Image (cartoon, rainbow, N blue to C red; front, side, top):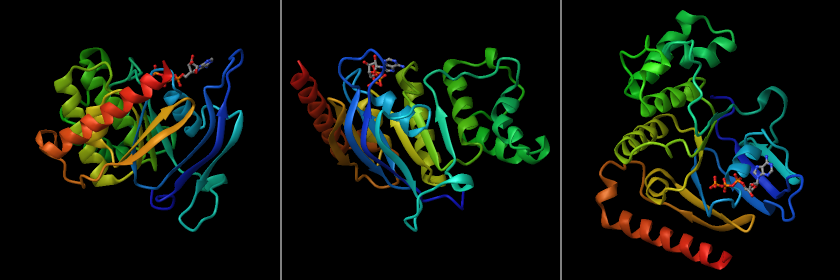
Length: 260
Ligand SMILES: Nc1ncnc2c1ncn2[C@@H]1O[C@H](COP(=O)(O)OP(=O)(O)OP(=O)(O)O)[C@@H](O)[C@H]1O
């Protein structure tokens, strides 16, 4: 991670129209995300959050505009200096014929790292995500929350510069979601990847993020810093947290009302 850490991503004039669409999903969207930020993307269903995430991940090409990865010295990334991007999908998509250890170590093995050399990092991540002792389990033996932890560990094992997450906790109960939010926040504080999270949960976005970006009508509707600092244990009970959460929910309701 050291060589490419600190990259920012610059999206300029992004438009995306899928074939057969009357109106484009995204149009003239500008967004810059700096290295080390934790940005949550919010907005009404269908406003293009997942589309933007897939564009940033390089899984889709924009119909218009450019997406650039910019190094701290201002040069554009290219060739072997492209930042390392990991995507955590909504479904954990683990390989059922591989153990937890082998699922998590897979990205390292694909890069040629020997099993024994991969082990310390894999075990360290499993410990950090509350999966200690589960290395030899099979995916079918795990709960939904555990599978999602394994999926996050697998995404983090290469120490990516960019961690892109598409509603990873949507299918989980509230308690599990809180626990995973706590774990994700701790991992972010320790390792400082740039995180871009698509979510419908205002509480999750407020708790986790350093910045919230809302989309509406195919572009950025508003963009708000979240200044709670790095230590967020117990934050959910604070009046300032609840006030910001209420303010964000009100903004989203206003965006939704403007659409109808
Ligand atoms: N591959 C595709 N082909 C055609 N249309 C698509 C495709 N992917 C997305 N769309 C359309 O683009 C629009 C935005 O979809 P997208 O999934 O990005 O929204 P979203 O904000 O993530 O929604 P949600 O919050 O419901 O997940 C929708 O109208 C959707 O039907």
